[in-house]
Length: 64
Image (cartoon, rainbow, N blue to C red; front, side, top):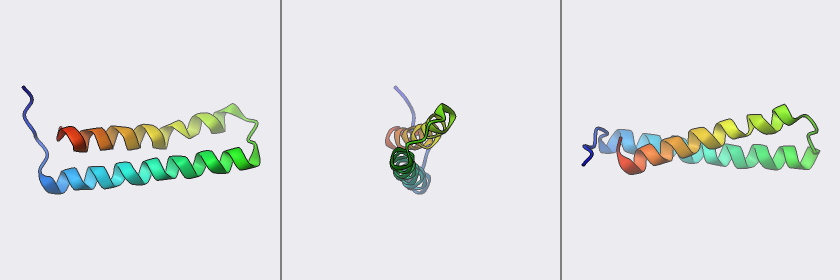
């Protein structure tokens, strides 16, 4: 059994940040797709906002 250590305010803040990061990842992925980025490093950079978004959204959901 896990104990929640985030209050409602911090949980909302993490959820908001997670959603913003996921939206940024989608925008970046679309932008790179439209300019047909050849460098794989740019494609790898898109992973960072998706990772941060998923991490924060899950933390908000689980309140950890």
